[in-house]
Figure 1 (cartoon, rainbow, N blue to C red):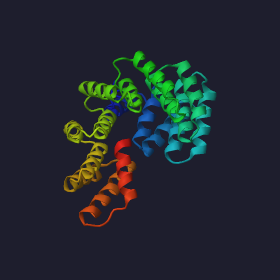
Figure 2: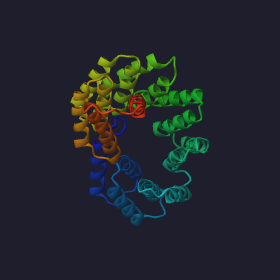
Figure 3: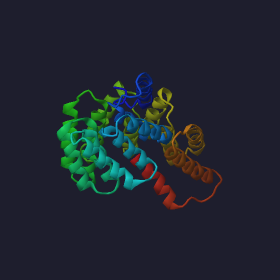
Figure 4: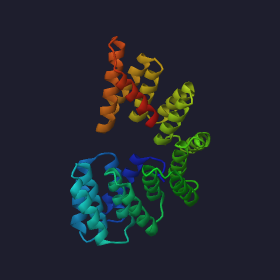
Length: 299
């Protein structure tokens, strides 16, 4: 439930408590590894890999975690090698196929990713796998297939925040579905107000519709509940876009101060430097302005 609502820090605390009781447990450690991967905690992921391989190298989970560790440190060849090793250890381990699908997506091979996600779904139909399938279909410009997969996820777990967000995200990419996407995202946030991705998508839609004040209110409300660097970056970009550069500077300084992972820090720093140049009266290239606008609408 914590993972479904994007309460990843809470979920990690639970997994660490489980490992404190029993370091030999393997079941579920692929999910813990994925949480560490998302947070870019490379040292913790390295230790988890070593610990699990020491427990049982014949099990699929240690190799899945090893694959994520390799991907995080930039060794793409080993990442693929290890996920294939996981599948070889256990051809019925759904998460291995799901991870392989995501690795193929990042390598711009969505056609092969679809096959991997279908294999994962045939073993265990969950929202995470269907989310990957949606991404692969969208990369292949097959919007009807993407909508169908998102609907499957919602039918499978109608109360799942992840499934609701997935369906809204697909609808938001279609011209006729944006109004319904806004409705679903607002409903999602009424039950899971800390769902960062939902806030980001809702703000994107509201901003694209010219409802800037509502978008700013949405961000400020979310930040009162969850002071998240990603949301502060988005707020800074939106305020800058509206010419409120001093307010944007304050939001971006907060984002830089509190950013934990390198991606957020880099993005916040670059946007901060851009706004500072504007305040100094320096010219900002059209490419930079367009880039900031694209990032706001694609966040």
